[in-house]
Image 1 (cartoon, one colour):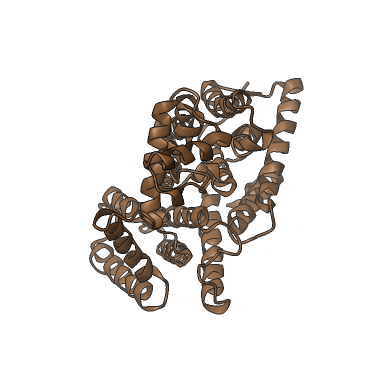
Image 2 (cartoon, helix red, strand yellow):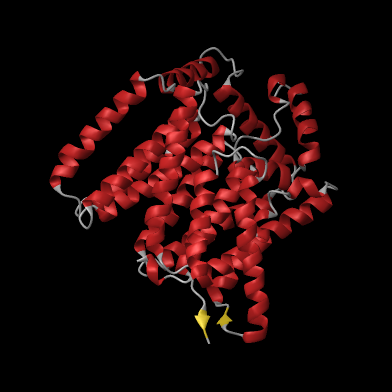
Length: 408
């Protein structure tokens, strides 16, 4: 399959494998920006060459993506000027615009979608093995914690695992050996996510699993549905609860936090503080709905709320609302909120529009958008450099496979 690839396409797939494999296990500062920067530079070179040769044409769907993600960055920059904030305050919002040339490069270069059949499982296996080593050999309390922030890291790994689960269902009839390889990668990835102890990443897995099972139930043999999957799930759940993965403790903490909040009127817990953050953000948004309070005034706003008894003082020092959408509303107002929703829904529309061109890629796109949406409900996933770079690289790459250049 890969013998017919052009050298630049082969190199691109190798770089993508390195990017996804090292994203959450290499701790060097800003390491994960190197490969995206390489793709963006190549995209700029492609655009310069095209200005002379006119060998490719940007179509309507390219422009929609370009306008949507450019608008997100431009609105964030204008709001920073209005709030008199420093350039560093929008460094994460710059990523979509900076990586747009990479999107155009992917549209022109990436043609062999089967490369993802190896990129995602191999990357997931590498991360899974590292997480096991980190937890049981290195003795880390939470896997990957010393490498990257565990909340976005857990979400990234669970997403890669669900990509592999999709491959398991898709290819079971065609290639059982590969399908079981993808399933093994999925289980390792889920294990890695569980070992991080980050609960916000776990919600999407059972939902996507059920939806994939419904979609492919007619194509999966009865023995797989009635024997293989139940046995594997049973063994996997036993492992999670018996081998010091921390999952039992995390579920107990959920129960305790909810009891404290609703029965004891004590919000000073992980979940309780999130409720305080959300209450604070909603109140702040209602006061400044158009432009928001800005990053600089966010803490001062919460101090006033604490003085008025709306939130507890312990909620003041936290710099974001632990919900992407509420955090954007209270700090930047309704305009950036709409732009944030757009960078999720516009790609989702593209994945749906081109589903007949390549259903596998479209399903990967659905999984990505749904997962990132759920991560944004419990944390500011796109406000973190790790979360934003993962989303932008993955969504641009998947869209690149679907939205091709139209040759003159």
